[in-house]
Length: 148
Image 1 (cartoon, rainbow, N blue to C red):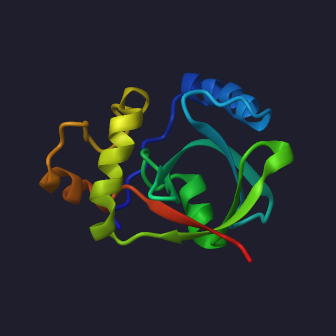
Image 2 (image 1 turned 120 degrees about the vertical axis):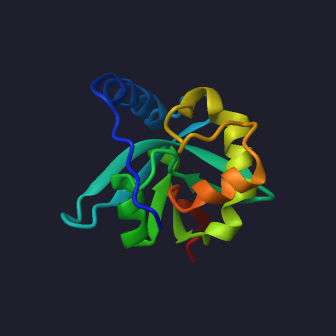
């Protein structure tokens, strides 16, 4: 995996805190969902707001900013909780191989490019297959499955 982390600036951090609070309350803004994952160093539960991509009945986590703290935590924990406070679902998370990412990245860009432009390794909804494959190694993608 290529290590890339497009760290958010203060305004983005503040906006994400508000959107995360709304997601915790069950109010989704353009498909946002609350994600909770155990921290890899502290063991404390961390929360972030994400866009959950659903394709053919499978939910995917995409980290457009690259190898973020939450992506590293998901990779280490292998398990997350998604959803608002009263309806959280525990899910196993498995990172995808780069070869499986281009089609999912295209779907993610089609839906949320307006939100992540400038933070997704230079990709656009018009990026061709070669560009998607080239960027895949710098964008962590996890498939979620029910625990149990």
